[in-house]
Length: 80
View 1: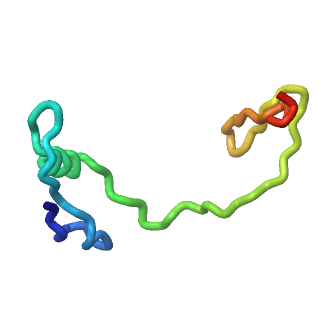
View 2 (view 1 turned 90 degrees about the vertical axis):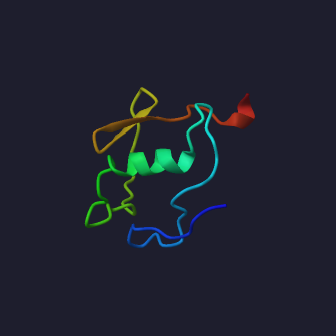
């Protein structure tokens, strides 16, 4: 059902085309190949994902981390 060869390094076991028709009638494998032409290459170095920081919230239930705001739960689910 799928072809197991790939021209992408490191993804040799990833299927390159599947014989599944979409609602428009196009083969999903053909759509994937068309999209691959527009994809950007992966970065040379993986981003850091292990960074942890202790934060303290103020009056509002939000925390800021690297210019991103995250909402936090103000009470436990058991109290509902």
